[in-house]
Image (cartoon, rainbow, N blue to C red; front, top):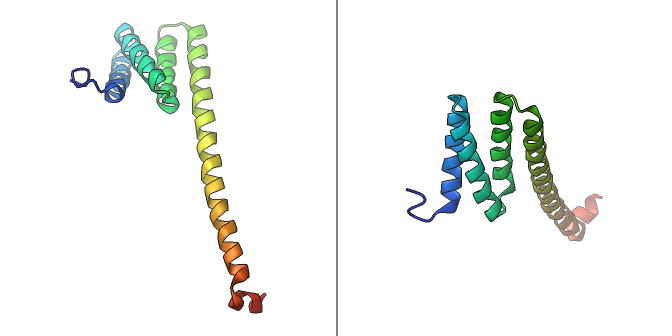
Length: 118
């Protein structure tokens, strides 16, 4: 249905979920196909956190199939995408709140009541 609507974001999400379900049912070949397709769609959009989810699941599929080398490759890539995006989010969040604090401090320093109290 998502493909019929040409909604690549939803299609990628559905494929990622489907891949996880198929992996849990030990249908590894079908899981890998769904996850690789979701990964390709997420890559097209530059959706790194979602890519990390598909890569992590692909790593679990490879591990379940005994391909330790490929599992490590996918899990490492997953962690890189997740870590970079998490750190980017945290840094943006901190800068936003520090900006508010600095702005508020400058307002307080100009407030005559605050100046008398300090």
